[in-house]
Length: 309
Image (cartoon, rainbow, N blue to C red; front, side):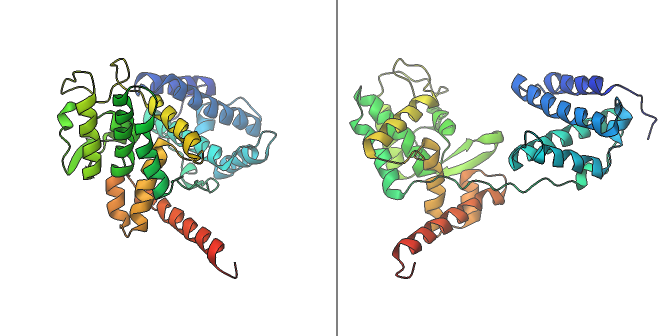
């Protein structure tokens, strides 16, 4: 390894943030979050080593130094949650990977450091009967009849096909008429095939019949009241209205319909691999959360029904 220049820590940080904003074109808020997390670590390291630090000091941090930093962040005056500490660790790993590429100087200790275990929240699904209510009730919504039909079609795609709301609103005229399945690109530009139930196809077809706007084949089919591209906030607001009208919990959201799609498939005997593919999850571990949801539901039923509960 080449002899490292004693570049001041602040300059190293500025070079790294310049790389994020320039070469990687990350959003300003993301760059600010990286700058904040790395700056806090460098401030700790300077105090820990009791001197102004430079690039060699950053590269040569030992495992005990990283652990001391995590302990301070977890137990200090402003203790962080396990999730926040994992986020800071992720930022540090990105920072050190950049240093290794830029200055050919790796750190062998950081890959050995594990943060606190984060308890992932269970997906917030709604029951099958609640999902059906959410989809059917928009037909009684105030306003133009075609808008109610539009809302029903979007929500039917979320629950009937497991689409994210952004994916439903991205459908264009080229996807029509909906057949038994369509291919779309979701998060991370990952392609997947999703099923289209007859009821879902019928809801979208009815919307297309009633919409007052001419829709070019390369444009999104779902439109706002004045003809612009429909925004997710409009559908989210409609579901909030439905929650009040139907007495549904606050967990009832458009995205909860996607969770319900997966949870109800699992409860009906669907296998995890298939559900993973239908949802477009990169990792099976993400899909496995739904087994926890189903187990929690069974435990609630047991607690309410068993005579010795």
